[in-house]
Image (cartoon, rainbow, N blue to C red; front, side, top):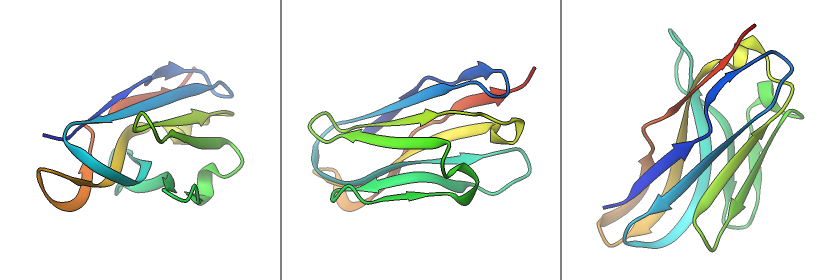
Amino acid sequence: QVQLVESGGGLVQPGGSLTLSCAASGPIFRVNSMGWYRQAPGNERELVASMNSDENTIYGNSVKGRFTISRDFAKNTVTLQMNSLKPEDTAVYYCNAGLQCACGPAGHFWGKGTRVTVST
């Protein structure tokens, strides 16, 4: 089965940096898009950043200029470099991948999430 495993969350002070990583594994034929979403308490899950197979990127308005997404297409990994972190960036961050696999129809898969807390 396909698995997305995130790493790199934690506690950081405002203005600090953090790097999140996600690796997709399993019977994957093709990964079309990989990206990150986040959900803060009481809020809906929102897009943080995403990159498709053509390396086109989309960023949420609140993170533009501070966060950078990158992918290793050979390893099916995605990384989110987060700089100038703010308390409002506090959330659970979820890795998402749109892919085709030997496990059924093409679709989007989710990791279990990694918590990021920005606080003094």
